[in-house]
Amino acid sequence: DIQMTQSPSSLSASVGDRVTITCRASQDIGNDLAWYQQIPGKAPRRLIYAASSLQSGVPSRFSGSGSGTEFTLTISSLQPEDFTAYYCLQDSTYLWTFGQGTRVEI
Amino acid sequence: QVLLVQSGAEVKEPGSTVKVSCKVSGGIDSTYKIFWVRQAPGQGLEWMGLIYPIWRTRHYAHNFQGRVAFTADISTNTAFLELSSLRSDDTAVFFCALQNGEIESWGQGTLLTVSS
Image (cartoon, rainbow over all chains, first blue to last red; front, side):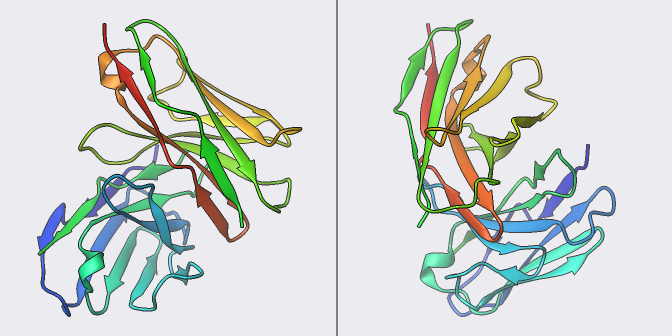
C-alpha cells in the first residue's frame, strides 16, 4: 500500500500568514493527490485535486503543487475560517490513503 | 447540485453488523464512484474503500477486508456500507462521498456507537 506522510501534524500561525503543509508519498503517484479541509463536526471539503487544480468555489488563496512523491498545500494569507484541519489523499491506485492530518491553530 | 443524504445514527452491540445508506440525488453521470471514510472520535480520516455502482466494482482497504461490504442500488441511486463483527473501536462517524469527473460531494456523516 502507498503510505502518505503529512507534516507538520500541527502548526501555529496568525491571520495573514502564509502557510505550507507537505505530504510525501512512499512511491511515485504522479499528480494523483487531493487536499481536504475539515471543520470539526462537518464533512471534509476538497480544496485541490490532481495536485494543483483548484476545486470550484474554493478561494484562490489555496494552492497545491508537486508531483511524484512530494506535494504541498499553500494558504497564501490565512483567514480566520482557515484555522482547522487539513488532509491529503492519494488516489493513484485503487487503494487510496489519507495523510495523518495537519491542525492549523492560532 | 449533487446531494448525498446518509441514514441516521446507530447504536450497536459488539459482534453485530451495521448497514449505513447513502442516497444520491441531483443530475450526474451514472459512472460516478462512491467512497467511504471512517473517522474515530478526535482522530483523522481513514479511507475504507470505493464502489462504482454502475459496474459494481469494489475495492476495499486492507484494514477492513473481510469485515466490510459495499453494495449499491442504481435504480434508487443509493449506496450501502455494511460492517460486521463490530468492535468498540469501530465507534466513529462514517462518511460517504461521490466523485464524478470534477464533481465531489459528501454525505453529512453517520455516527456509529458500538457499546454493550
